[in-house]
Amino acid sequence: MSDTAGNGAILVVGGGISGLTAALEAAEVGNNDVFLIEKNAYFGGRVAQLNQYFPKLCPPTCGLEINFKRIKDNRKIRTYTLTTIKSITGGPGNYEVQLETAPRYINSNCTACGDCAQACADEIDDEFNFGMGKTKAVYLPHEMAFPRRYVLKKEACSAECLAAVKAACKYNAVDLDMQPKTFTLKVSAIIWSTGWNPYDPNKITNLKYNSSPSIITNMMMERLAAPNGPTKGKILRPGDNKEPESIAFVQCAGSRDENHLEHCSYICCMATFKHISYIREQYPETKIYVFYIDLRTPGKYEHFREKFMADPNTTFIKGKVADIAAERDGGVTVIAENALTGAKVNQKVDLCVLATGMEPALKEQGKAYGLNMDGNGFIVSEPEKGMISAGCAKSAVDVYTSGQSSTAAALKAIQIVR
Image (tube, rainbow, N blue to C red; front, side, top):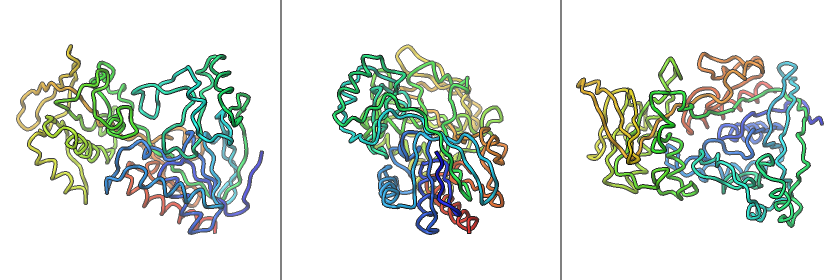
């Protein structure tokens, strides 16, 4: 299948907050035809997984719902989920991009009624909640999912389960014979807004991530605090659902480390202060310990930091964590050296949060598309080639800065196609 909007079309790769912003700006300001593709089954990216985001501590609905409505109302924008790039040929102003859309096994007849999920007997790990719980093998990615359509993991279902799921749908939306679709787009410029992934904590061997369910990541904390998360917004220790009386945060978990991520991930310190605000809303007396190298909360975020630095139940220890030991009672002991006093610290806590860094999602794969990547795997914009990076594909930034970056990318793409 071939699809083209003629000269001046723009392809936006990645449908998180950066991709949504870039697509809308290109279509609304530039009046350009825009193709927006996303590898996941839904748009919204990492922001959809947050409980709140800076600078106003808004819930994801604050920024995403209005953008989804604008996308649906704009006839210049065509959207594709479960879609990835197979190849790119041509040159600036005249790119030909071959793409593939994976089967969802649920067609556009879906009304998201949920009957299929009720009939489904098989379960899979809940990826949206970072494995903290299970979900049915046919599922709505999350309550605010756009498009609002179920997804079926066919390979995770037994034949009996598939038959039950199909029989339960009164709208004939379950299509078990759906196949991958390959198609080609002709575009003049490409905006890369491929976003980021949390750095894999299993690679940081001294932090013993898999040794205890009491060691979680900062994104897992976001899901625990979220009303649509695995605990309906109550911060509880995974495994036994204990209300934590003490919590440790380990900063720069993988970041600023030549063995892992050389760059500062920018958001991690701010995220920890935000998480302290979540904890204080639920547990005013819980003891909090923050192990850090430096605390970086630039510009307007300094006031937010000052508020929690003065918290009498929060202790800040300047020192890199050397080890985390699991304890028999379900807690863990964080072992570090206080860089200011030289004293060894052995702090036992109920829950430990690793402030894992931001890793560019595309990484080395970008080179196969002819992209220029910096030493940390971020995409370097080359406007002369019609290739522009935006948001966290360009550098590690917060949501607010991603919006600014994506608007700039859209304006640059508009200039290129004209």
